Length: 386
Image 1 (cartoon, rainbow, N blue to C red):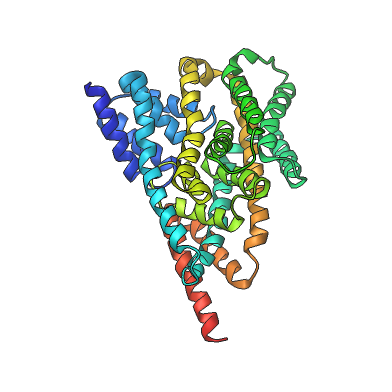
Image 2: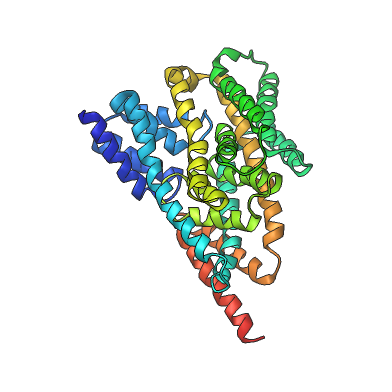
């Protein structure tokens, strides 16, 4: 089938070359499917971007699925998603193997020392950029402050975001005195029921196993509103603090290494899975975190036009986005207290933050690489003059 073959080749290519995060991914897809191949007109493409913002999961991956569906039907939906994810999974697994073999050796530790403050700066910059799109009025700010306080008081990250979405949606509608049509939230309610089933199954076992890793990442993928960087908050809450499967230091290194890979940011889950249980763990984490995206795209596809115009869905999205942003900020501040412990780390953080703010188009991969070299240089100089 010509259409399916074209879909496979295009999204496999994009999977290998799409560096730069969701905005860059979307721009590449627009160039390929709208400008070059004319598979969609520009307005239809923009509508699809809007829909991906209304469902959990990695937006650019879901956009690839929807573009694949429009070109080759349901086979195109699955093949586009898989082909876009596979290169990142493959490259991240290879990097995880190298990290596992060499990352904890003394001669490599200075590089990772420099990387961690840079990651803090990169995440805070992502929070800043997202806040400009998310903060629309004082009501949104109030929801964000409440969720921020709740997280600092110890409320679970997933609970904070879901509660913020539901309560915030109600608050926004009561404040505007509008009637709520709950029927249009069917795709979202399905995610809550799906999540409840996962949580009940999660109690079966607490030891590290393929099934356990799969269920944990399946739960995260089910409620992953707010973009790829919110994955940091979920992983810190679930994998680092609740289960103690990896250290916070390993988490930051995983996020940093994830900046070097093309494709979705969620490929970081592959790296974490490998750290926990080798190749089996990498596969379980990858399938778990991406599977909900396929389910949600299948559910939402028949409702595309209704959801695009739904005020209640937009209100839910606004509340969830500010809640996710607040949780991301809270977790980043907590991690910052662990990382920025001396003048060298603060110096690297300051330089990285200045670069991401001034040079907005620079790839974060270069910032991570430069910070690694700076960390090595500072520790080398300190040792020389000691």
